[in-house]
Image (cartoon, rainbow, N blue to C red; front, top):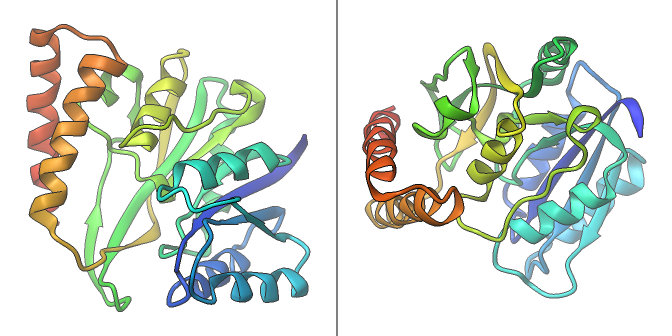
Length: 251
């Protein structure tokens, strides 16, 4: 394990319209000791060609592929984690973007012994990349119990410390990122925020209302079947989650 290296894990599927911008946002980082592991989930467009071209120009960018399309970012992300060589593992989806100071501002947070996971605010942008100051804020610090009230850690902002945790993998479950953050914080550490906007989340055109209904079903399942809570405790956390989800949707 390289104690200064950040491994950036990027799942990719038919992202030819966006992957170039995502890669360039990593290339633009003011912190340069990173590797970017892009795992293609058998795209049918020219995403793989774009990634291979970048990989041929910069050895820090590495191309991987699933054997067959998985239909989910879970397997591609886990392939990236398995092949990561860095002490720190960060996540960036193929349609999202980092701002240049992201890694430079996050890594010092790990100097605190209790910090196992770092994150930041992020800003929503349209599918075309238009920004309008729609910032998603989050608490300064999150523990396991606080995170149960709802996911405040955007996956595109998250970085965890392998030296403190070992390698942690995504479960084969919807809301897999939320479950992973819970698993990390259940070990007793905390997650710390830079309290700055360090990433841009692309809002894709799709059925928002349908997505929200599915998300609520997944969240209830996490409380009941993943965390193993009883009905009353699950209901308490679920009501808090629903409120926070409503507030986030208004941004």
